[in-house]
Image 1 (cartoon, one colour):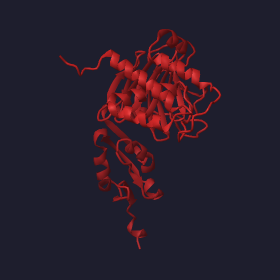
Image 2: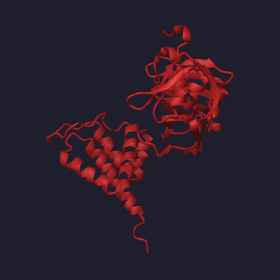
Image 3: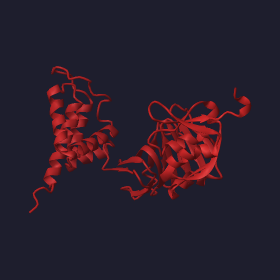
Length: 332
């Protein structure tokens, strides 16, 4: 007889507690004693932290919580009702799967009826979203999926993903990456994200790309790419005959086709624990070409002095730094 196996009642109790703590920690009158009790509750079981994070992500996505929790506990005092409190209470009940309230949240477009979280670490991974769409995740990538009444939403937290989206013209598929978004109904496309840089490559169909998250944007056709960074008013568009290079990661390869080191570093650093750094702009102008194994990019870095006029040093934080070897005529 196994008494350690968690039951459905156990799971419901954890969800209930996670929703309660999510509401209390974001209330103005949350006390220091409550915060200490919350910390003890988290430490009791690994499932507590996982469930709390899932509840928090859904609330934040539905915009039901205030933007910032108070840094310190404040003395309890009467306060005027805030608009988010009724919504937060409804969210708690919805998350506890009471059908009537959950239906109201769904009908108002405030809450998704499906939520999924996926990540990949040491291997490329293919996953299926609740709408039937297929997503292939590159190494060290992470995304969340939400199904709202009027649209399907993916948040690409980090990394790279290739999407094959199930067609539904009445239920658009929107990918949030950086400050921008990619809006589609059904198509195949790739999204690469590194820090504040994003590149979208369209293989089939059409997408609408915006660099600052509004519903407008620029249409891409097959073979086109759009790139943007945080703060860009509009994305940079390009028609690429060799866009397949952007998809080479699906076969475990990284293709650097006569790129400057400044251009190549974001692609290389995606696969490193600590980023490769440039000593100065001069070394950034050196060009590199080749096809490399995405599972062993560290070897590429170690071999750079064998193929380029550079040498490697270490910074104080342990990062590898690329330095240019000056021609003899420039040495003193």
